[in-house]
Image (cartoon, rainbow, N blue to C red; front, side, top):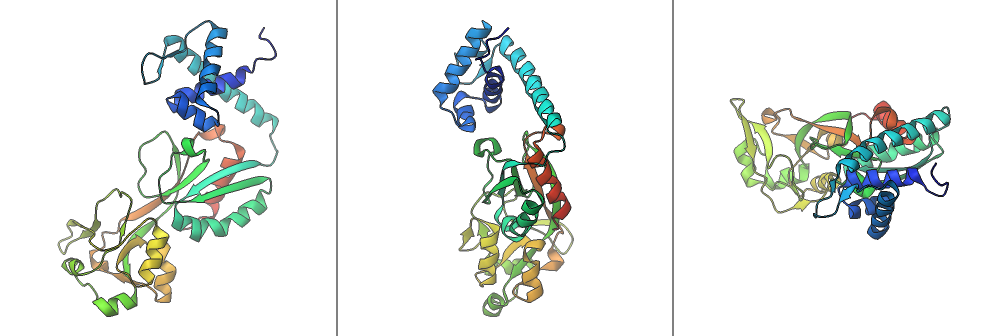
Length: 301
């Protein structure tokens, strides 16, 4: 029988995190421990088990056969513990800290107006929200849910689609009065096209030509911006022409602050929005499941 002063579940959790993070230092950041503390804990675990779990002979972390077997068993043990805790807490209201990361337009125009309703429904949840259009590492940033726009990169993350919106090219009436209205794709070369300062999955704006064939038009202009909301505001102010999701600029179009352009050449492509998270199904913390279900219920794009 193990001594009662040994936190075996804690050792297993640290070891599993080391394997999944790929290194002691990455796991230490996620666990808010020092790398030396993580290394000592793994060494103590190996001494107690009488087996080497991790090979330290290379820069890249490698598991021994015993380490692989212990990892597989550890994952099952942690899942069983999580299940036992959830069953014991069945019927209890979701609670705890929920870390949410959202791209800026969704955060400002959807999330901020929905959070009061969510917190009223779940008063024992504390939400920590960060708005950024930069793609983050959920494990590195210790985020529970990230809301992202555009095609998803392949990863171990799980995604729930919240909606999608047709893309549209727009400009302010003030800009068009000063520079004219583009009528054809070739006209764009004489206009200021606003760009994003981060990498996009397509290097340019997609259109279709008069024959219906796809065309990618390079974005040429004098301004690059870090997020979609800054792009919208700058476009409304008359800085140039932008290509944004229709849901994002629909109020501006309805109010006459922005005008759709080149609709005859619009390929009709749509930008999806997903909530991505770590974990699946029954292994999700109640607070995360509650938030995902709430978004699916309330978000309209």
